[in-house]
Length: 135
Image (cartoon, rainbow, N blue to C red):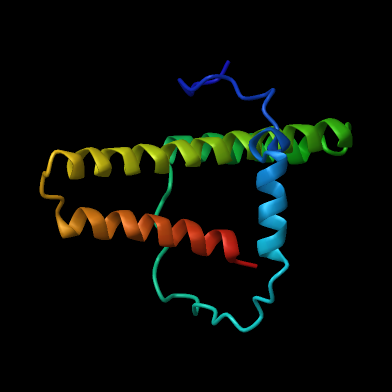
C-alpha cells in the first residue's frame, strides 16, 4: 500500500496528461531550432528540491523496482514507468498550481508578497525548467 496520501495514479498515463491539442502545440514549439539557445553552465546554481525527501525516496525506490522488473516483464515495466512519470508530472503540476494560487490569493487581497517569496518561487520554476531542458 502506498505511504503517500495522494490518490493512486497507477491508471494515469502520460497520454492522459497531454491532450491531443496540447501535444500538437508542443510539437510545433519543439520543431523550432533551439541550438542557438545558450546553455547554463553546470554549477551556475544548485537545483532546488521539488518534492520533500520522503517522497523523493519513495519515487526512487519505485523506479529501482521498475528497472529490476524489466528483465522478467519488459512490457509491464515500461507501463509502470509511464504511470510513475505521469503521476510525478501531475504531482509537480499540482505543486506549481498551488504555489501560484497562493500568490494570486495574496495579490487579490492586496497583501504584500515579499520579494524573497517571489525569488524562491522563481527559483523553483527555474530549477524545474532547467531540469526539463537538460540533456
